[in-house]
Length: 207
Length: 222
Image 1: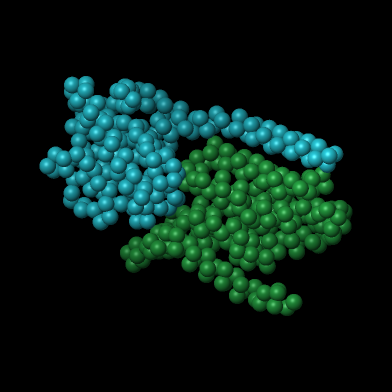
Image 2: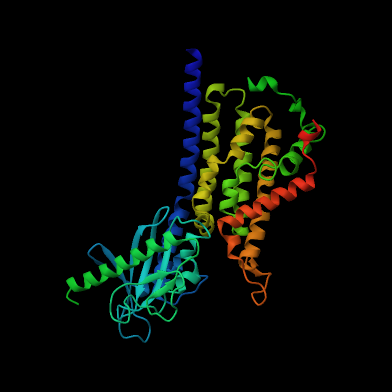
């Protein structure tokens, strides 16, 4: 009995100390993590919209650039980001999307030109895919493929496809990642859903 | 129970060499003759998963050194007061604390790398090297020697990881940490090395080389 009591006390103290250490660490790193997250969010939106900024800029500077150039607007449950490129007449738009990846949620941003068909940029900024395989969705070569593609085919049918051995000349096909078929399928669905939502939102707004 | 078997009289560290010569033996054991990855084949899950880039391997190695040293130190410090029945739970609690601390710091100051490694830093909690060292070494040995053991095994793991990472990145992409070593003009990067099978090949070759260099296993002499 005495032994059990000691064991309980020991477990409680050890657990308490560990919890205390973790809380302290979490408190200490909290502001840095938040700043990282904010800077990254802003950086993602700026890059996908193609807003010019200094790549070495600090997180605070990025937030300034963001506030000066980008207009936020909620449309239904979507958050839209508008930006007017210098010399451009119409605004380009970016929208956040998210969905299930292979191992966990994937979050990203899709930016469309003012024609609302041509992709200006795509970025997957948060995912838990396998590093080196599905994780490649956040690499430049993969995301870069989307630029200039359209979310409809030449006949006007909606859909963007991520395929093995994609036809480079097709306006709505990009290459899939070797070894990450499941991830690619899932993000393909995600992108198409996002496009559908944008179209739906525009129809409802009578645009 | 464990502390009764304590073989060494290492309490007089500082007078002569580290832990009366056992420090060096411990160091050599962990890094070379009893290398956790190449000889004991422990903890290879992470070794296979994160080694497609040298940088990832290095950070992962650093994580393991940190956690192994920390957990060995505290398990060793607490070895005389830890109730035997719950010692493994206590070990896991200590290990988890260090892993999460490392993960938090990575997230705060090395954001990109944290994203690259994904869940594998957190999975160090279940790495059997760390648990194994706590059980097999830190429970029976004094703190300072346990630190040496932690460093040795951490480095042993990190070195093997770095080797695998170096060759996989080199053969898989032609470049290492941004430096192009195998020119794309004549070298066709072998995707296989980046993929999972490449990890098994690299791991197998490294285990073979380690064993060949080390000579016949000690068991043979027994």
